[in-house]
Image (tube, rainbow, N blue to C red; front, side, top):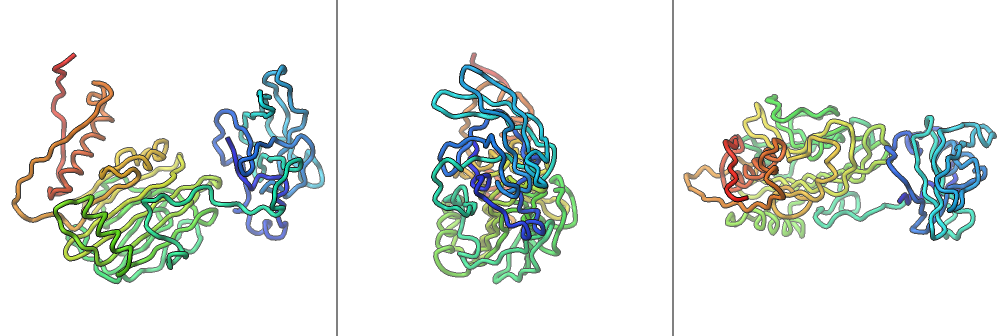
Length: 417
């Protein structure tokens, strides 16, 4: 299914505006097309136009239309050529052909492929259906997940400048933040998905944790993002109100027996930001810093995350990597969409960490672990073992053990058939 209001044939671009801001255009060479697609506009079934479409429509320079009639059901799968209207020539661009199939119920599906170049995009024909708004304005596809803290200008936050590989200016913290023994009074929110303390970072290729470097890094999702094309990066600090009440409740739920009260919250949000050179993608996540008394915590909240071929990393790392953590699976761009369903605190999409340095007491803890395995290979496959060990480690760290502990699995023995 493909429901994108920008693709409507009545979405006419202003030529003077889009000549300057080409980053706003749809370019379907950036899309990894896989399989068959049915077209919708606002939930209403539509089809590709099979007659010429005005240039500068469908959210792009040269809109793509089907150069041939749609098939009948008995025709099966057919191949049709595709044209892009440009330079007053309805077939100014001859794009790659696509396959089309008629389906019972009076609709069509298309096997889209990457066009021959930018800026070309497949159109959705609304000329024969009723669409209320003639001027098409793209709308958000999904509301922010419930686990997200308030963010953006609506919550009184500050937006980063929409520039590739940019960063916020230095942000003076309203309250010191203790991060594994080092106390910080300032922070930077970097557009590429990570926080730094001593200086801004324009790095778009993440370090592999443990990096054993010279700086502390908190990576919500460190990768090659581009908010100059799509999305907003914002931040906000709180020292009173409902957000502190919520943070207090969350931390006491995730870390019982601490009797914690939040006095300061910092929320950094990447909302529907595109990956670099993948303008149609949207990725949303948050990093929430919470402190009170001598305790410090991080919440990482994940919404919809697009897959990518870019290098990625989520977690945190410290100077010389004395403490570090990588969220399992977050360093593989093909699987990061699963972040919205993963957790170490039984809240889908949320990872929680205590980062002040942990308890200095000599208390002894006994921690139990309940695991459900689908097969014996879950504990014999190397990749699965590492995920299990990381989850056990986080449970131990939650109760005061240092993050520097290393766990290994010596042996797996099957005692029942």
